[in-house]
Length: 154
Image 1: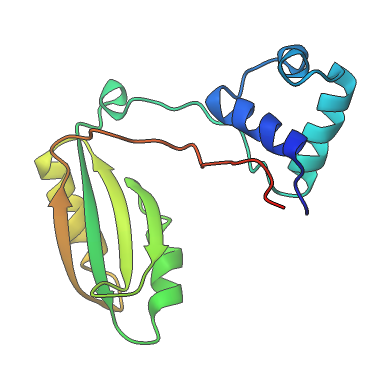
Image 2: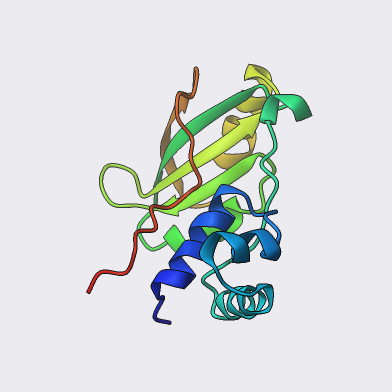
C-alpha cells in the first residue's frame, strides 16, 4: 500500500494518541471526519494499523522486574523455539536475531525469584535450548512505541 502525506499525518496523530477522535484528526489535517474515517478503515484493512493498545505500567500489575534475554538454540530448532516461547507467561517480546544470540526476548516477572523460576524451570528446560544470558533492566530512560513517520519523499 502506498501511503500519501495525508495517511502519514493520520498515522502520526494516532501514534501520539490512538484515542484521538476522527473529528479532531479531521480538524488538524483540514479534512472531513468521514474521509478520515474511510482512510483509517483502509489503513486498518491493509494492515498498516495493526491495533490499538493501552500501555500498562508493569509495576502497577505486580511485575517488578524485567530483563532482556539472549538465547542460543540448537541449529534447526529456531522456529519451534520461537513458537513455544510465546506460550510462556512473562515472555513479552520474542525476536529471531543475528549475532551472538539466535533469539532475543524481553521478559517480565514479579521479582528475582520469579525470574529465576522463569529462566531455569521453563526456558532452560525447553527442547533445543543451548544457553542464555539474562540482563536485568535496572531502569529505562526512554521507551517509545512511536515510529518515525515522515512526509512522503518524492
